[in-house]
Length: 133
Image (cartoon, rainbow, N blue to C red; front, side, top):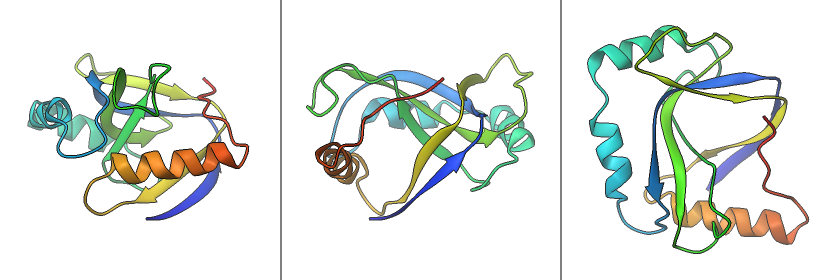
């Protein structure tokens, strides 16, 4: 898994979101259903707002339940774009982040299992999982 950690000032992720079960292996059908629910109008709206690197679709998971290192509980998953703009669209959700250090990962194949392993490595090395919003 390739990744880099980068400091970002406040920005938004704008897209569609849903509470989904935590699943480390295989296809998470709830996330697949979320992706398939996106209509062309929403795609166009998200692209109009996108003004930050990587200028492509982001899959963002947040609001994990306390048991996020185990395969039970729920998290909020959002499919969207990074932007500094406000969201004027009623059919899109916004997740606001203030000054954060973000991990940007290039993962081929299954994504939650490599994410879990990387997260465990960060925690063992003294990092904390925290969203500052």
